Each structure stands twice: as structure tokens, then as C-alpha cells.
Image (cartoon, rainbow, N blue to C red; front, side):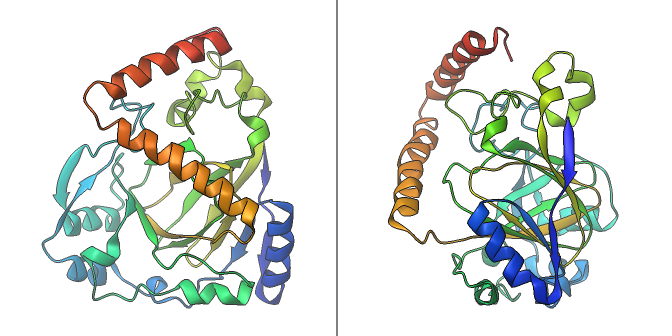
Length: 288
């Protein structure tokens, strides 16, 4: 596997470099773009006070919990959000994450309005952010977003490592047919290299994000994220600008969203998993 350093931009060069990256459909790290956001000033005490006694579903490793073919794995536990934040503050290693979490509804007293900050890049983003919290050592299974849209991920409180791969790497990543996921558990990558030899041909990017950094992830890019320390990120989606982009996103929502809803029906998820396993075996000559 060959991982190259992610292209970077700083200061006054950020807008021009972002416009070039977006035009080319290549990733870009904008160092300290979100340095002055209020989220970068929040302490764990601030976060704990804001969520009060609320609880939330905590997610774990999708492979370890038998959910490797599910679009959105089910929570493995429900716990106090403040208690979970204290674990992150203490940097206690675990698989526990809050994935695409709606912090706005759980902590309405905090400032969540950052969409206008991206106007300096010449773009418009959806005003509703998604929050991602993770403990040291936890990771999100490698995937690309089914709605085929550009992402802006701003990071805070600690460090996280991000690997990105474009669509030309689908077979090297052992994509599960009909999904946006890989059959490879990247948390066990070293022990699985022999079982998945195409991994040696992987070409991608690597970066470690620090507090205040923002990462541009172009549509269709696979991303694998590992939390180096207890930390969190805020992700915004960039609105499509052309009719063709809107059509592709609408198509993805209709079929991807329909698949998510169908899998909630009794027996459908199991049937889908069996069908995808057969397709995978036919394509790669092995099971997952």
C-alpha cells in the first residue's frame, strides 16, 4: 500500500488551492481554517454542561458486531453523553464512537452556526452539520458517502488520522457489491494483508488532522478514519452546483436511501447480506 502525504494549504493560499482542488476533484487539507470557530474553544466541561443528563446510542466496530454490510450499524450501547465525553477527555482507549451525531439537538446552548464561514471559499454548504466523536484507537470502517457529495470535515480537541482513496481503488479495497463499504476490517489491516492481496496495490493519501484543521473530501472518495486521541469533528456537505451534480445526488439518495429503509424490514437485511456475499465470492473468488 502506497500512501502519499495529503496536499495542504495555509493562510492566504487556502481559497485558491481549494478552488483548484475542487475543480480537479482531489483532496486538500486546509490547515487552521477552523482555528477561530467557537467549537475550537469548547472544553470538555463546556460540552458536558451543554448535554446535561441526555443519553445517546454509542457505536462500535461494525465488523466486531456483525454489521459489516449495513449502511448504518446499530448502536452497541446507550449511555450518558457526558460520561462518554469524560472518557474522551481521559483519553481512555475503546471502540466507542458517536457517528453522524446531532449535537445541536442535544446541546442547543452551544454555537453551531458555521455554514457561512465557508463563503470565503466561494461555496455554499448545507446548514445542518454532522458531529463525529471518537475514543483513542476507535475507527470508522472504510467507506464512501452514498449520496455522492463533497464533504468538509473540521477537526477539534485532539488528533485523528485519515486515509483517502479514489474510485479507481474499488477492487483493491474489495468493495462489497451493492454497498459503499469494503470487506476489509482496516482495524486489523496488518493481519489481513495475506487474505486480501490486492491491498498491496492500494494508492491513496494520508494525513493527521490537528485542532482547527479542515479536510476537503471530494465526492466518491473512500475514507478510513482513526482517532489518535479523544476528539471530535464537524462535517458539512457542499451543495451541488450543476444539474448533473444534483441528478447524481438525487439518484444516490433514491436508491441508497431506499436500500436503508428496506433493510429495516424483517428479514431483508439478512437476505441482502446473503445476496451480497454471493456476488462478492463470484467477483473475488473468496468470501468475506
